[in-house]
Amino acid sequence: MAEKILIIEDSQMMREFLSNLFKKRFEVISFENGRDAKKWLEQGNTPQLVIADLQMPEMNGLEFTQFFRANISQTIPLVILTGDKDSNNTIACLQAGANDYILKPFRPKILSIKIEGLLGATNA
Image 1: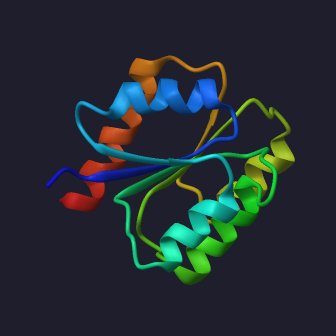
Image 2: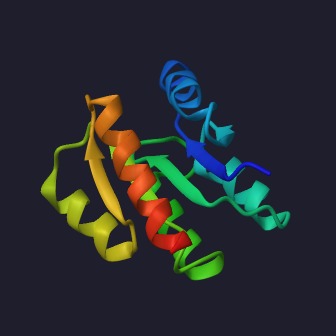
């Protein structure tokens, strides 16, 4: 069974891009906001890794990270992927438990390598 990546991104174009980037290696589950992803997780579903946008309606990436770390897992890797260059948001997300904070635009190969590294660290 393929490992699951949970993608939370309000841009349909970016959700599709990320899904296409990872679908050969992973089962990709995606939602357009943190609230819907939270419901999915509360139903007992568990991903091996989460990629979340920071700026989303309903529940933003920081709020989602705080929920995820408090209620779902302290160890499942979580990456914030955002166009927000505010260093205060970077610090807040990392302090809340995000494993990485990657700025858009990003190089797909670099993102893939980082994701593989995070998953390799949890599977070691």
